[in-house]
Length: 382
Ligand SMILES: Cc1ncc(COP(=O)(O)O)c(C=O)c1O
Image 1 (tube, protein in one colour):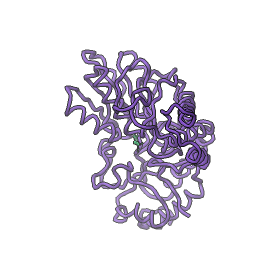
Image 2 (image 1 turned 90 degrees about the horizontal axis):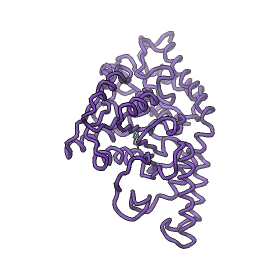
Image 3 (image 1 turned 120 degrees about the horizontal axis):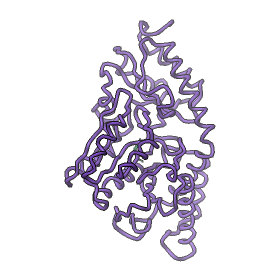
Image 4 (image 1 turned 180 degrees about the vertical axis):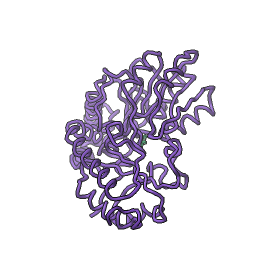
């Protein structure tokens, strides 16, 4: 039996999601743009999915556009803000996902846009006074792009406060909400926001499908030219099965939000306590409390000659965890997030990320393996 603790990279798909997708795969082959019966049937499934997602975000259906995932949604928000909305300054943070940071690099290469990256503290938090001071200079049309929850260390922004500040200073606000959708209730009626991004595979839906919420005040041009799909915003035949699966996964996640959250928090707290009582000099790159995304715990292990092989040995022992984001874990380069929070490079950071499938018993098994793998002098009461 394997123990999967890498849910920030991706989550296992829910059986109920597989069921609705399989049904569509078997029965609905019509092109949603065709006007005959088969086409109209597929179209109605897509529009129903749009309604389901819009209902959860409390926005209008015309503000939801389907995409291939978080990366495409973030690219769209950032690039179209510059191209179509006159943005000439973007304020973001050093710990954003690479699909934001690399997009900002591209924007800088091709446009006269000033990009300011805020520096986080040792847990990834940003200083909202600093943001406000920057926004007092209103000589440039500004977009603030800050992720709701960091995928490597879990740090949350004060989402409502950032939105309020952006509104006060009349600037646009984009949030990469990829790690938050399905785990927190987001109401765009209550929290004014220009763009937000979601990816189905982070909330037990299929991979390769996501969405972007674009507030109706922001009129942007198509970001993929082609046919008239997605109200002419994104050409290409829609990923019907993925879209239907994503909507079902979000329904399930939002219906069970509290129940799943309580279970995950309990498992996470159990790991925190077990680590503290078992391994000397343990520390965390994540906040231990509700200032962190409850699905993520980034643990900082004390230096040891066993550290480098820890992840590999855990994998051999049947446990999947990660050194950071899935997109960088195959690369030689260290984590830009850990570098930004100035984590001690001599210590080993491991991200454990949870879903409602995880149990305290799994954490106990993980702890037995960790204790066995760790040098005796670092184990408390071996
Ligand atoms: C915070 C964050 N943003 C964006 C992405 C990219 O999403 P996708 O894999 O759907 O393109 C990820 C995925 O790891 C993520 O964690």
